[in-house]
Image 1 (tube, one colour):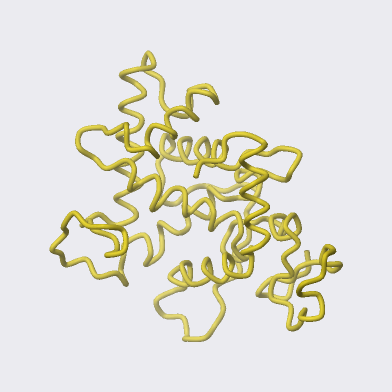
Image 2: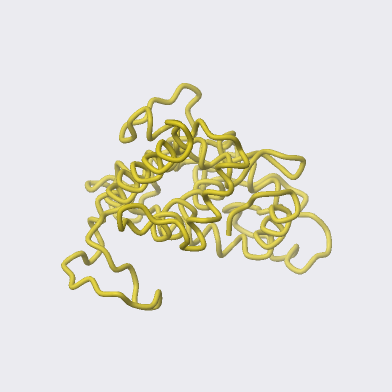
Length: 244
């Protein structure tokens, strides 16, 4: 689901409040692959919060511009809370491309790759790195052809939103590349992860997303507040014991 206006974004964030513990645990499971190959089992990930002056390690300048523009479309800053760019989500995605996740190291990638329902899992020989590289290239190629040579990052907000709607619905394809898979299975999921992850992974700067939805983080005990019809009264706590 793309978040394109105040009403839809409010609905998304309200839903996130209800599933926050599941969402954050899910993110931790997904990004556990960002740990070093040599890191001891059971150890937390390296503490690498959002950097003020970040230089991407995987994305090219044009790709980096796309990632920032895409994050801004999917979760923009508004009166509900901070936007994805503000919370360092582009950094989170770039860092993930430089981990075993980016290379699909821990995935079964031997094939055969057959058309199948989503329940049968990911069906492609392309790694997440390759999905981003080819997906961004395809989208920018389409934009240049249909918007007077402009890239996605150079389009207006309305044009970007319309493109994502067309991609999400499956109506827009470029050269046979499955843009819907790139958008729904990678870009959109990674934006959600980076927005709600523990700050040590590079997103959710200062735990702002957790504060917004009232999620306590990794506090040892908050059972007395479960089911209470009032906001959680204390600041969230990160994996490294930092308080928001």
